[in-house]
Image 1 (cartoon, rainbow, N blue to C red):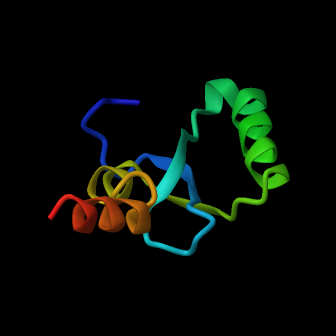
Image 2: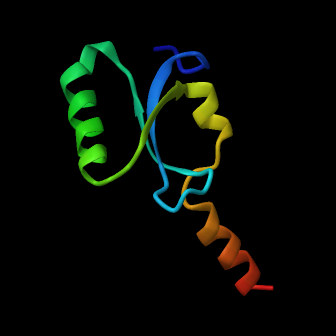
Length: 77
């Protein structure tokens, strides 16, 4: 994978609260199929929903729980 390849596939696990953030990103590297599958299975066992997206999407999407970030922003104001 080239570092600037925005269309390279990866998997994300969305935050369980239903916000738009994601808490895990796993690059779909064909040289590491077993490791990728193991990480995805682990996320599913923990109750996360998995989506297949691109690296470009991951780079543009907020990381972490957005509801917690909103709460922290309002607490400091």
